[in-house]
Length: 119
Length: 106
Image (cartoon, rainbow over all chains, first blue to last red; front, side, top):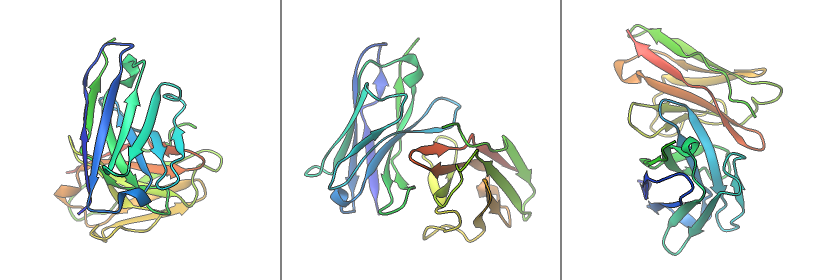
């Protein structure tokens, strides 16, 4: 069974940085694109970023471009989200998700981690 | 891109069928429509992909369709365990999600 274990959330002050990790298991990690999505408290889902599999192109939502960086280490089956210059509006539960092989949907999700940035 | 529009809430009695709509603008709703179920405090779960396909293990009580710029999710034979939030999503150069619908089983 595919598993995605997310870690690294916490309380940070505005302007500070945080790195999230997502450790994957039970599938051939390097062949799948991986994504980060988030959900502000009581709000809907928002796509944040995607990184390709073997050809690791990166893509970002306008709201985080220039502040967040997605990366992956295929030797560790792990994807990361480096978040810099955090703002109050970045407060959310952050989910790691596997993007389906050829489709444009997210077939497995990690449990999420809360990032809190007070205003 | 703006969020896709869903009704805030839909309710039904056990055994009934309900339908959740997901409306976009212009060409938002294409072949890459997916639906996710989210129980409180849990991660979303994929229940429909590419408009009408169900992943392995998802009940056939869930079905999806599309007409013009509106996608729909139908839950037939409503059960207590179906009480959750439901989100549609579409991809057109970027991923956009719906506003979410809370399903209540009366």
